[in-house]
Image 1 (cartoon, rainbow, N blue to C red):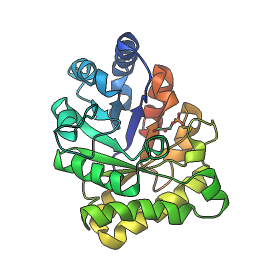
Image 2: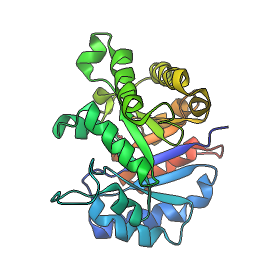
Image 3: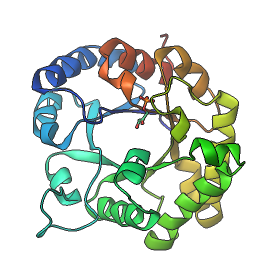
Image 4: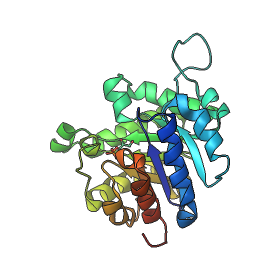
Length: 255
Ligand SMILES: O=C(CO)COP(=O)(O)O
């Protein structure tokens, strides 16, 4: 019922030439994952280039890694949701743990950005997840639900009617240590139940991605779980063969 979604978050990596060759290699294989929605999220400065390149490949969409909490105005260095939308972005990653920890984004700021993405007619991809310390203290559920609730508080009960959630345990990002399929599934279930308490219809259709050390080797087992609807991929999204393998693993075709 929920169409699988795989997103590549390039983070602050690449140059024009590597972006072009990566996109060409992924686009050339697009027919092998035609039952999966695929989105690439380059650094803002390369959005135009990526948009131009994807013009010939309608099955791969473009997303922003972040948007400003403000609308257009005197905010030096910021990029508004409206600008990202104007450059062809259909999705916006919101509240990635690197933004939360390295750039001090609070739940309140994250909720504001989520609202801006919606207002700009983009699909916000809300990242949630606990740190290693929080996990060790048995606080995973509490932390993740607090992050979800902050968005409901700002955006209202229908906040997730057109949105995606990405569960990215902080301890799994870039460490080579992914959550086990069972562990991830349990958190995804908690997230869907939490959304259902406000909006049962949105919860049923909500795509919940898993992120954190997803590779072509572990993707299929993760995506096979009932509430894992795809992945948000960091490092492996920079390597064409790996990213293509993950996209195929999300679909019904063979890897
Ligand atoms: O942070 C991530 C995607 O947003 C995950 O990164 P890795 O896939 O490199 O662990």
